[in-house]
Length: 186
Image 1: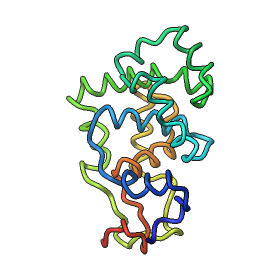
Image 2: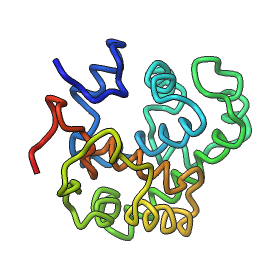
Image 3: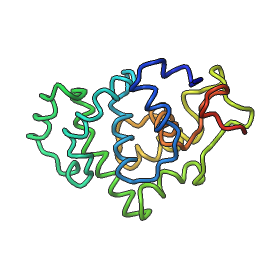
Image 4: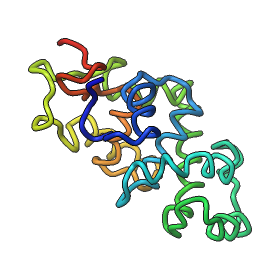
């Protein structure tokens, strides 16, 4: 089966590619989890995060934003001692800020889904010329706008490149390449 080149032949990575990456995601909790994991991925490979995803879910209480927003020093100490996750102090300490920003966006827009998908007009963006390995980019005007707005709302680890990766993973952008079985003709 032909797939995008980046997932290689690791079974965990190919399952992620085949069933998750690029599938439009509209569940608030799942979107929050994905945005948090993308932030933790910064500077690392995505397969590292996938291998630790269940540990992240356990350590971050199922990515419950209400609970994460109230984290205290004992929570930071617990997380920084947890070998099952990425123990970057700055990323761990960003979690409550991101949870509070998420909750604020929910209050303002009704759902985080409504807020985050507004950056693509509520639809999946596709390059009309088709997608090839050479055409895949690391950011876009939409990810620039998302990053700027998220930062304004107090989020951290949400640069434009992280936002673009989030958009790809959440199906806001379809970057499956020509020849991949998941590629959609434009």
